[in-house]
Image (cartoon, rainbow, N blue to C red):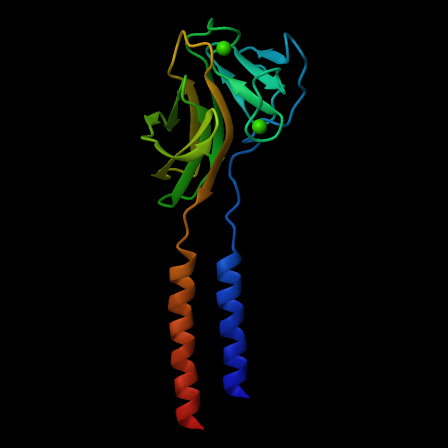
Length: 202
Ligand SMILES: [Ca+2]
Ligand SMILES: [Ca+2]
């Protein structure tokens, strides 16, 4: 009876541990939400201070926000950003967002970008060193792990390819790095110990 209860708890712990998905801290990380309008050919010009795009602030220079633009499909959903604006005329565009983070916690940053024109990702002003980890077609997934230094972390996406026609960004996420399998294993080991104790007492 005892042992069956513990075994049931252990099973629950292991199953739930395996299925915990960390929430994306980035609001509107795929740029799908907001009051989009067709300014030109499937793109909307967003000027600095424009709040049309949910969750993000445009800084310094305008960006182009696309909604299923002909010939340039988003990699996630319908909408994407071109940090280089229309054609190649925006040299120094940025979009920013403040994330609610836990000090000392590790986070996984992930983004999809087009290799023809890259953006710099900065966390509280410090450049992240991104690793390409996959992707498909014109898009590459870039990721990096950072440790939060404050409870309000500034995420900044900045055009690093001035003059390029295509500096696309989509599918941005920041998720807490939690070693769930290890935690579940340790807990499981403890529970197995308890089972042993229960058996010895029986
Ligand atoms: Ca998208
Ligand atoms: Ca462009």
